[in-house]
Length: 277
Image 1: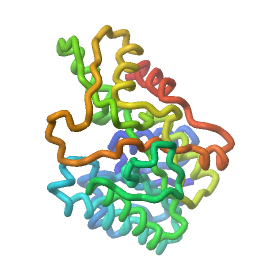
Image 2: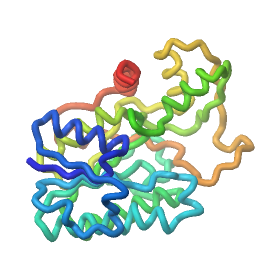
Image 3: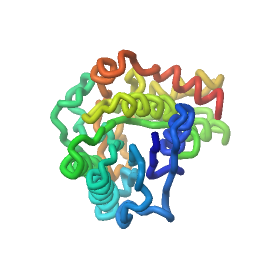
Image 4: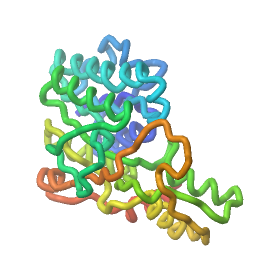
């Protein structure tokens, strides 16, 4: 099996390349500047069995003032990749996000739940989902959330950096719930779905929803740091350009049915990451 990973130098892209290599697949990773999905002509994906599109504009707040850039990559560029796969008979995986939801349900979200982004980043990813399905109907869309891992900016490192610079007390948002997910576990799950030939929308994230406040306390506990963490509301006088969904915990029920197994927990992912960082 030959797999091409677009966005191959990003946090998730690198994890996907490693997961594919461990399964003995032939892999190739591309990223900016050698490959721009808004301009690519398809030569890079020739002869591939699968193309995994991990390329994305992920700056949630900045997307509010740079919507054109967000939509060029997350929607138009994603559609371009899907069309090239369809024309060449190549299987295609598009990585999407929990931010396609409005966060009002307050119970784990299924793949068929009503979408309704509350920010432009989420809207660009939702349009991306629709375009890739239009261009390549059997695209596997993996919605995930709150990623952490090596080779990228992430919440775990942000918390630990504040502590190592001397902070004895932190304030963290306690009214936004998600499932912080280790990219290595996500990448392994994506490979399983590819092996099974899936072609639908599947939610894949860690088991165990929690607030960012709860996750921050867990990080410090597992890292052996004695630091006070205070709960903070999303709009406690702080300027926030982009609204976030209050509750975007993804249900993994479909993933369990497809693969016959569940995802590792948030705690398991965090411990593994801390051991290898």
